[in-house]
Image (cartoon, rainbow, N blue to C red; front, top):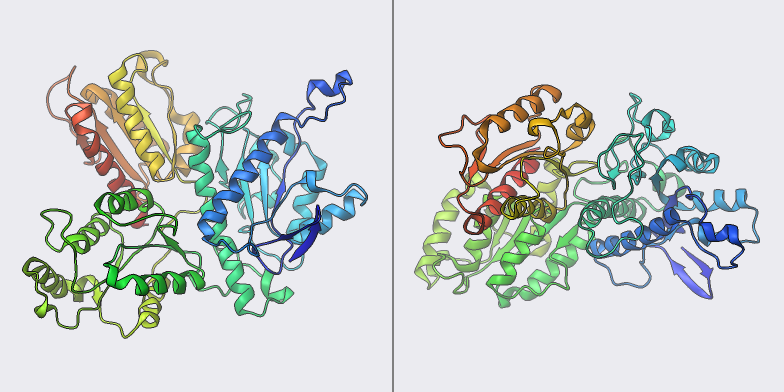
Length: 536
């Protein structure tokens, strides 16, 4: 839908809405310059942060949507866009009714704003909307969840998980959002959580877009939703994400057609078209960048497999299948070689014959007539599988005894935190270092631990007594552990204590030397995280 704006046409991604996202937030205290008659118009700090946040979010969503069509740009509305000549009540209500999603920037100022509560009520009652999947909550500041509006709570009265953009702290402590007062490129926690939020909003936009296109776009059909994770009537594959593997040059047209077909069906296809995937290094980088974002791996192979990586039987074909399998990622491989026995390269031929013999169990290789039948198979398989991406927050609680005073300790912890960030998670790291005897009570972090999808003990110097103490407390406050979480104990170089560890859960990685073991820790940690998510 279009509206005049500054002499230009503003076009939303969803054709039947004027705005894709309405941002509901409360302004912070007015800047001091306003009281000194300086004449300069300044936004308060919270408004400035929220404006930058909305701009960054729009950019990330458009990347995930994968469209360069100027007629499909994401439109986000915030109150600075309000026209001065219209009555504020009528104008706001109109904007909300013409918006597909609402994004609430939660803060104590929001809870104290009558206008914000009114915006939420208008959105909840607009048309025939139902469910809470159209409302996304960004936790910018700590706030008292008891005072949250009912529309931001589930049926049992518990506040929505939302997306936490502040460090865990007591509600009475002021805290501040990541990237405060203005996010920059180096604010790792900010970008990590922003990317997760962008992916989830992208999924919702694609589901609504599919509903509009396939149910006529009428008022009743386009805004009916359920209390689940998708609008009513939308196939499960819509909004899901897949990784499209590297293929031989002779399959370029097939690969492009698969990308176009899956994208047109409402799926997100990685790698992005702007990524140049052409050699061993870029293929490895492709897996590193996208493994935590996708739910299946899609590949077409023919009689050519290339000569890299060196020593890899089956070349880049077997390398990619191996990486997908190692990370418990469903692999849909279409083999176009009519007679594998006639393939000239003996190692590749043997590899395919072995793979074909396993296909009945693994459902790895299937023959297809054309791209249409192959993509239909992929969509059908994703329809059968439950979505693996957890709703709401994706983050890890990292309990660490690493001292900030020792460079080796800091490097070890930073390695793990960087790995978590590469899976588009952010990390909560309780402060053990300043606690008496290196111990703290984790009860204050129970809410964060309950919501986290990963719990990691980062144990330096083989301090098993410390690790076991913390592990016992984690199990106590989480009801003896949550089977859905990845629970990992990573032990650093043995230094102070010798002997073997009686592992609390068996998932132990002991490394000897930070530099030597860096890649091992990275791969093992990422494998555990992805394994737990894909098993959900």
